[in-house]
Length: 273
Image (cartoon, rainbow, N blue to C red; front, side, top):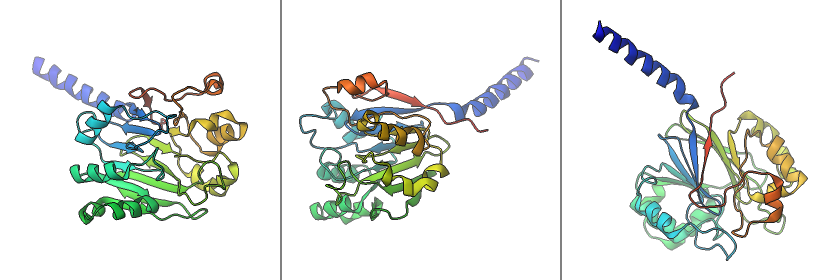
């Protein structure tokens, strides 16, 4: 009798766990500037995690955190892929990325072709490029898609803020669906002008994004808010690239944002209808 009850309770617990798993939260951890880590316990990805310069304005990754990340210490010990938005020095450290890929042979890198070309100029270690995917997108070209370890990866080029002054910069907006988990979007330094987004209306609507991470300036204008709230088809949005000296207008906007390295946000997958 006792054995039968234990078997029944075990089966019930397993059933509850299997039912609950899709609703278990994914965690986003803030590293600094636009660097974030997203993990659902099975898949872990990094966006713009290593960069050499905050220009005295933006949050740097704290040294203990950077050292742990480079060493692959918990919680950075099970990284599957790194995504780079663009090659500016407050987003991309060519030297550290090369060293990181040499140390962590399971990690793949997705980056603009501009960044990959720079890497090739800085190293003769061709072996790492077997795990490097360069994205050659030009402005207004169709988005690209990749499959990686159960992840669905979509990417589109959206001009860097300050358009058209920085038209030569390949700024990539990544939309990644983790295996059996949430969909997140990282916008890099995207320009908050709807003219850049309108041509991709079908692309935005094709996939519901659970959490978008735009630069904070999207929350400071009506046009930027409209892109975040409507155009991107995102359930939630959290600002990044926030200066160390918090802009008062951002504080009073009521927008959610990441500002202190190490702080986290939970992201839940939209329930199926």
